[in-house]
Image (cartoon, rainbow, N blue to C red; front, side, top):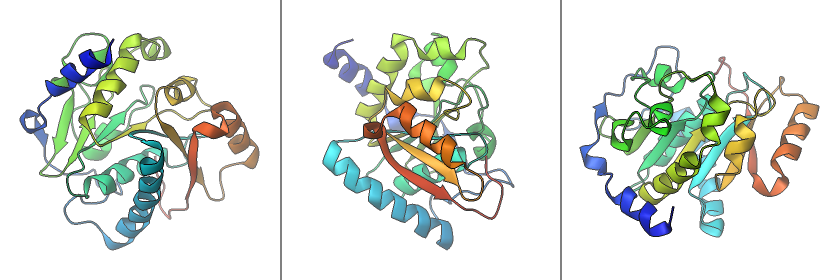
Length: 237
């Protein structure tokens, strides 16, 4: 797919015409309010957003993968709140994508429809504009995982996946991907080759040094933008 074709496709996506879902997070979800952020989370993720902004300016980064070495370390919690923090900036349309096709959780956290979503688009069963939802009146958009699929890794190997990320990076200022953990499936390693950089989440008191070392080795140091220490007092996804 040529750059011109990708650009033309992106321009067909009118953000103002996308369907809107009210911001009504699940009771157990710990999420920033995009319009009225809680003070503690806002400060933490605002700091992360600022540090990431410097890297974006230096390297022209738009697409960022958020993953962890093992399950249960807070990657989905981090991806969602980083996206909400990004969306708080003026003129910064941000897209949060649930590429964890094995155990998707973002649709539950935001209490929005799981499908149509990524899997439906990649299989040609839904158009791009059908798969993206705007959260309230904010600048946050969410692309959910879509219908369950059996051959998840095979789906991600499609050229259509690479083209999708090219299109999204042209349409949104910031594209944040949630993915399976690195040591639990090969999906994250593949997705890491399609994005501008990767953020690794480590849970204090839980993540093992050996597992983190293996994750970094798999990604390659040039692909790792940073490691986020998640020490929340509540259990995160």
